Length: 155
View 1 (cartoon, rainbow, N blue to C red):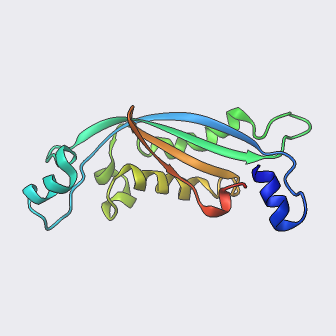
View 2: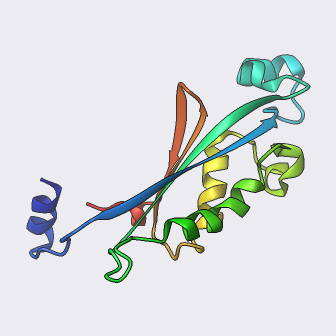
């Protein structure tokens, strides 16, 4: 249906295949959500137990999806081992860290799962030459955050 709508709007059939590769990565980290200048009570009203003075931790799961054409020689969208080697240094910036104290970006940005997703996107989009489609960050088994940019969404 999306291809038919695209054809109707553009007047020609440009999409013949849409191939993606998604890999999962894992890291454990701690953080504290709070707003400087607010009382502990006010921070608790906004962030609940996530504003605990001593922080708290998560076992994060990150899904990264890229797309592209299938390489005729390898038969792959992207070499799987190379994919992991490119992503691991970025994931390792978080692993076993107190995010808002040890990852410079989060000194000025809340260490929410939303900002973690945005940070990962910004670090990885150039590495994958804008082939990245979305990043999904699971903070716990019940909730995740997806980050993508309009230009990365295929009709």
